[in-house]
Image (cartoon, rainbow, N blue to C red; front, side):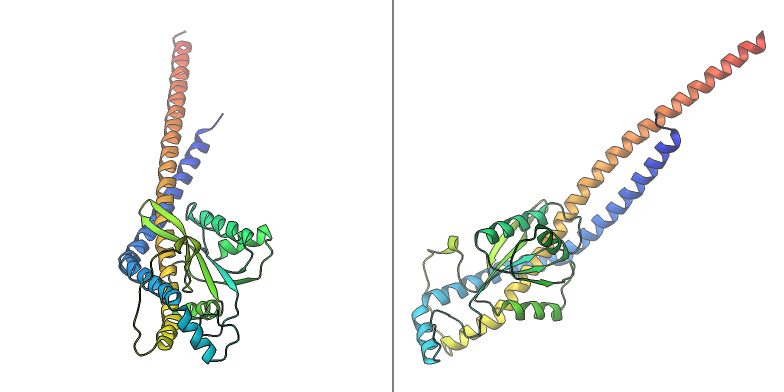
Length: 289
């Protein structure tokens, strides 16, 4: 039988835990609000920039091939003005800490499913993803980057981009904010080549000033970094929204548990009062005798 002391101890523990969760929820809400407007404002712009990059590489493949031949590059199919290693890299944007609900695991599962079907080099951002990946012992060349969950600094971002840009194709698996209660795993190609399900769209025709070569250099150096930075911000926003929802649900469960504990505590108090009353009546009967 549960004692009154145990019930009070459990109630105090649950109350303290609920206070902690509500504090974390407020922090997550504050961080989400801080980056939400900037992320959403720049999302459409950078998606369009990435789409234009893809169209430029696809529409002017022949012209770029000619430029590659002029530079005496043996493989003209490498449509790039930056030295690449010809490989594909899968990048998982994970997290360092927990309390983000299911979104991290969902993103990881999509990442691993693609990786098992098409083995590639791997880069993982965040300790949670690294821990799961190592535990599953998946054979793949791995590079790890430690990145804060709340804000990425320029030096860390530059280090990651310098590694990513060495690859011919970079596929990023990350979390995207849809609304307060919905966050989705997303797969994005940031190297200027459309993913299989993105192919088939009509191609626009462009005139380049000062030259195609200069435009491609700009896309591959500057736009690549900007698109990847946007992805990191998107992931942060989705994770904090997911954390806020997850903590809110946990807080509601704890509040319900507290109510049950209080009911148990009150029942024990009634039982103790009844017992004292019975003892009092019994002593009064003995006194009358």
